[in-house]
Length: 526
Ligand code: FAD
Image 1: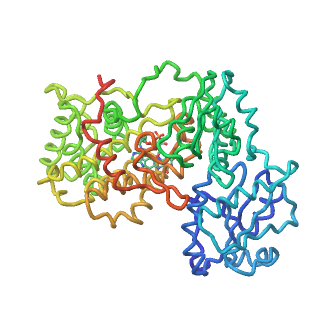
Image 2: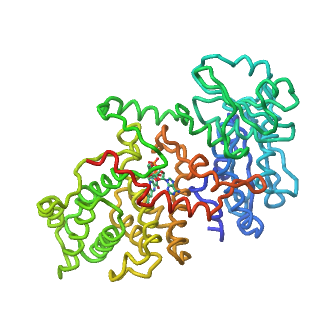
Image 3: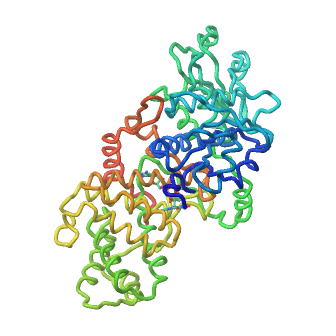
């Protein structure tokens, strides 16, 4: 392998092309492409790769219109193809129109400005360079709509929302929001220019960009977002009831396969600004009685991991008394045992039978609330595990003395290392565990305080959300988004040079409130 060749990996939200796949991919593709021909030994390419990955993540939802690719010209295998495409310098950025022919070598972007926002806007311009004949099939219209067409929607009942972004001629917000929502059903986004004065007056709009929403029931009003930014508009629309991510053919087959199997489950109303005790208790029930119970005996490293897990949960879980008592007693029992090997049945017996007599009890029902899915195979347990561990990291930072005399005190990494080892040894989804381990290996050691631990887990969870957006395991009713969304925490979101950025101080404050005991609802616990 060429040194440094792995600037990009399969994990990144882009397509890695080679001499075997480049032409085949481009020929008559239904989408346009923007490809970076790079060289893995070129210092600038290495420095630029985080920007390119961020761009690819930022425009992932545009992939039915335009896709992002990379090809490494330093790889021996690709020498010929880079010559054929006339690549002399690295990086070279080439645009390829949709439906291009096999002799098309693309159009080079020669500008010196390679900032993310500039390249994203170039992608929009490039899309608009298509003609009616070669327009990418999945790409919605990007031209401004006629104001008369929009006004005719007033009072009209339809099966979808229509959002209209009103903006000035130089603005890209409208087109970016149109593209952000193209992967979603239930909403159509259009744009109108602020030169349409009568239109503006009719809708009562005085400053731009602004967004106006026509609801399916015929009512309409100005869209209520805290900041007039692309991310706020797009996020607001993605979260409207009834708006959901379009599904690929395989996801639909999957849905068909399981339809009707579990239709008896009654939907439980819940508030997404709350954390539900029922989710965490159900998670612990599944963890103790199903996931761990598949291990006949615990010994060595696994036993140590189990003990630390019980320690952390017993000391930090802000649960109901009956559950906390059960965890504390289990911990005392484990600590008092001189055994190096424990049959798991003994633990089950304790959890299921012995403790119940003294009122220590962990419900045996799976009762998903904030973690309920629109189909039985979606969400549930993994959702509850994230919830549990976020709660534990927050509790550790709110109550730094809680782990005193356990052997885990004064370690800012106590919760995260325990989570890491639990996931590695016991979490049933192997591949998830491997991904999590890779993330931990890369950056866990940089965590130096209990607050940083809270933020680390938040950051990594968002990284997983971004990787899984649009994947088969995504519940279409709960699209994977960067969290907390602007409706939950407007102050967490800011924009710098056209790129969405987090205000991490505000995020930390939000997480500490969200996962605090005061925000955990006992609803639906039996
Ligand atoms: P989840 O992602 O489970 O989130 C649960 C809740 O946490 C959300 O509803 C929200 O309220 C809150 N939340 C969301 N983001 C954040 C954040 N950044 N910080 C704090 N709170 C947040 N699935 C795969 O297909 N592939 C994988 O590689 C994979 N790896 C995983 C690794 C781990 C350690 C875990 C616990 C799960 C993993 N999963 C993986 C499962 C996946 O992440 C989801 O848990 C699952 O798809 C259910 O998704 P969900 O919509 O319920 O939301």
